[in-house]
Structure formats: structure tokens, C-alpha cells
Length: 344
Ligand SMILES: [Zn+2]
Image (cartoon, rainbow, N blue to C red):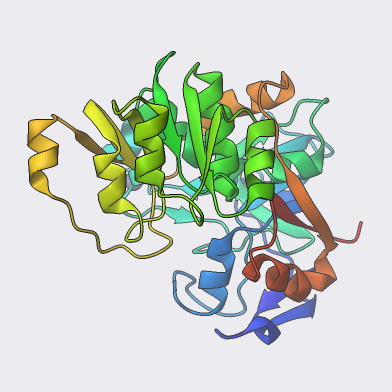
């Protein structure tokens, strides 16, 4: 098969487009003919070696995969060639306490496509049948591939972990980012009043189109002061956090009494400081969140089909231009997803 595989860690030029062996199926696997793959910033961290989960080279990146069933393993039932599918990216060990509870996303031996396993920068991907979700007829391959990781992460944060309720005020950091675009829409769907931040006025306009009620340009305004102004000094019920070092302390101070800060990462750094007096005096909750579960993704597919949520695609590249696509993502000029589409 053709793939844009990497043969070592390094710059963009370690991604090489060419022939690579098509994965062989185990009895419970399905070969998915990839129709689109969504890029995540995480791909760049695996490529340059900041995150080294892949067991060997060559390695195929790409966590968000849509496609059609091409071939099924001997023990697979319920899937037939030609069926459109979306891939749930996490594979748990199947044996630990978390896997048995259905929380594959926090399995200690959690693996996922594009990191520990070959992903979607290729014409075909080998996927355990248990990771497939049928794609409804009304949902296209590209909008599907632009959806899973960011929407699932945001859903798990806001709905499952922070339990956002109608009428609450929610601060969404970096509304122009992948998780931010999802976060604005999901918080709005929960009935919250959404306050969104971004670094350019153009991104703020886009955030309003997606449902943000109030917007803050964090380069021109102090987001803490703006949150106080917008909420009449009360503060917000929930902060949706994925930035880390640069915003953590002020984010905690943005919370009202009994407020919740939910975090899924730290793009500016993981080391943060907190004045613990705020936590106990105001009875705050700091909530961790990691990816999400397959049933949650199935719910999201229904909401995508019903047009209650929409994925945002910025640019689509042919697979052979994987270097250009990653370069574009690295410049961080995109609003929405960058996709790769293999040759048919
Ligand atoms: Zn497990």
C-alpha cells in the first residue's frame, strides 16, 4: 500500500511517501480502506520524537480515521466489505480494572492509532473490529475524520467529567483550537452560556458563529478581568482548560464558589502553581480528563448525524503531501481540521 510513513524521528523530511507493506490481519481485526485522516498536533510530537510510543520503524501516524471495511478477520462478525466506518482510537489491555469498567481511556496499557499502533497516513489501516463504529449514510468521510479526538476529548471533559448543566457559565480557552471548536459547541448544546477566548478577532468571530455568547481576545484583554466583568464579578461555573502554565492560576481565580476546572492537557507547559486557599475557601474542584470512551463517541456520531454538532474542516491534502499538511498545522494558522486523503 501507499503510505506517508516515518522511518526515524525528526523534521518534516522524515515523512516519506511510498510503498509499505499492507498490515496483516489477526482473527479479530478489520482492514479499513482509509478515506480520510484528521491531523492532530500530537502527530508532530510523535514525528519529532517528543512522544515516543511507537515500538519500531517504519511507523504510520494518524489517530482520526474514517474509511470503509475492505477485509475482515476470520473471527469477525457483523462487518462486511464496503461498510463506511469511523475508528475509535484507543485500544485497552482488556484485562485491567479500568478496561473491565469500560474506561479504556484510562487503561494503564492504553494504546492508540498513530502512536503505539499504525494509524491512518496510509491507504489501509488494521483496526480491531471492536474499535469500529458504523458511519451513518448522511455523514461524509471527511467530516467524520475531522471529528473523533477533539470532540470526544471535549465531550468527556464537559459532559462526563464536569457535568455542565443548563444555565451555567463556561469559559472555553483557545476556542480556535481543535478541542476549543468542539468545546464551544458542546457547552452550548448543554445549555450553558459560553465565554470563549482566542488570540485573533477573526477566530473570535468564528467562535461566535459556533455558538459562543461572549468572546475575549486574550492578546488585547486580560481574560480574568473580562470574565469578572461579563459575570458581574461572580466568576464562571466551569473552566475548560488545556493550556496549562500560561493560564492556570488565573483560570482557577475565574471560578465562582463551588466551580469546576476541567483539564485535558497543557499546550504551554505542564507545571502550574495554585494558591490552595482558593480551592478550599471556594470549594473548587480540579478535574482531570483523558480522551473518552467508545460509547461516548457513538453518541457524538448521532449528534453529528442530527446536525446538532458540526466538524470544521480547514484544508484537505492528498496523502502524498503529508509533509505540507503537517507544515501547515505547525504554523497553527488553521481554524478547524487539516485532513489527509489517500489516493483511491
Ligand atoms: Zn486495561
